[in-house]
Length: 272
Image (cartoon, rainbow, N blue to C red):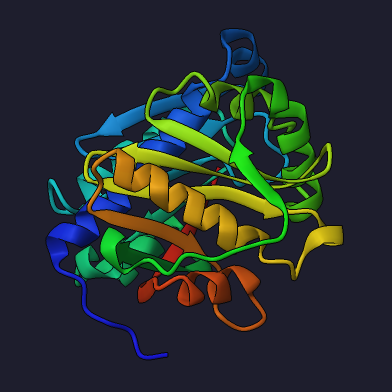
C-alpha cells in the first residue's frame, strides 16, 4: 500500500511514545529482576536508550526517538554507544525515523560499525478513525494475578522464552498510564495486549494470541478495547509498529482497524 505523509510533529510524538513505553516496560521490573538481567535505562532529551546485559535474544538493548530534540550527529550517537558499552551489553539497536536521518548517515554508520539489521513498519490512527473489531471470546481488563498467563502468551506467540519477561510484564500493572486487556476462552487466557498512554498518544504493544486461537478476531477485539482506553485517557492518536507486510497478520489487523502505514523505520545494529 502507498505510504502516507505524517506531520513531523506527529512523527516525533509516535517515535518518542514508543521509546517511553519501552523504557517504562524495562524500568518497571522489580529491583532484583533489573539487577539479575542487567537492565539500565536513560534519556537523551525526548529520546531514550535501554540496555539488558543478560539478554541472549539481543532484542532489549536499543535506542528510540533520536533526532528530534537535537540533530542526530556523531556526538549524540557517541553518547548512545557509550551507554551501551558502559551497560556491558553485547549489542544494541539504533532505531531512527527516516525523516530525521542526517545526510551523512551512511558514513556515520561505517565509522561506528553499525550495520542494517531490520525494518519495522510504523502505523498511526486518529482515535476517531478506528474501526472496532469483534470476537466470540470474552474480552476484559487484566490484573497483576494474570501475569503468568500473559507471559505464556508472549512466550508461545513470539518464541520469547529467554530472558523470562514475567518481571517486566508484572511491572506494567503498576504503571498508572498503562492498561492490559485479554481474551478468554472459558478460564483460559488466549490473547492479550497492552496500551501505554504517553501524553496525547496511546501506544499499542505487547499483543499476542495463542496459536490455538488465531483467526478468531482476538487481536482486532483487543485493539478495540485498547482504543476505548485511549479515548478515556483523552488521547488523540494511536500508534503501533510491526514487521513488514508480507505474511504478517499484525500488519493486516492494523490496516483492518483503520490504521495507516506511514513509514518504514530501519534498525541498525551495533556490536561490542
